[in-house]
Length: 264
Image (cartoon, one colour):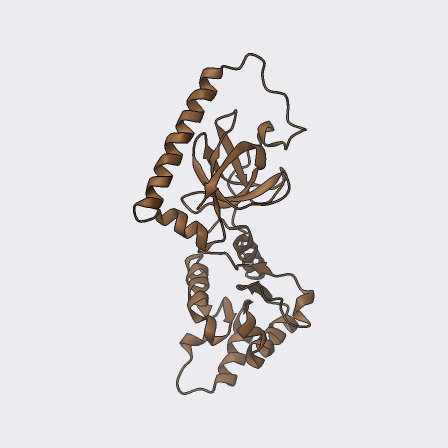
């Protein structure tokens, strides 16, 4: 029995293989047409497998939007109320699928805690009658409240601690610069591929900053970054910026809890 069917354009096979592997890692039985039996017609197998599957992921791209096969498969999945839409290159799904929500995996590099990837997993869990993956336990911090709503700093706070934090940030930034000079930091390169363009250093009065699934205190915590830690981000507006840790953890952090240091 197939749990998840994946529809895609052949040109996107390399990216889709990554999606299929990640879905299998969650314990689902996955079918995509690399498993097509040689003695059966394509149309017959596709109809059979979509009918068997409890969920159908459609991977939209410019190539997929131009494919009659992908559109037909998406239509069958939509009519069966098992459609899970993803986009991998920023392409808007074609009519009428642009009226249905989708997960944007354009910058996804396989992180299990990516916000849009977790949307996909939540949909798969619901359609397969499973419990959705649980986020990291939420422990709110008042220091995340974006300024000017944050509480005023405690009077008489030691300047020595701030000086030490600044020195540590400079040391880490120097190490980061050295990585770039001597062959490049693989973590930074992975961050660049995911769309992050600048390095930053955590500067939190509480010496730890929460990384949340979305840009608000109501979103669950997916990770933590510590005082002086180098993270990656990109120039954004607003009081919450999307960031990425060196271990690949991606989410949103209150802007006043880190200092942007320079380009990757």
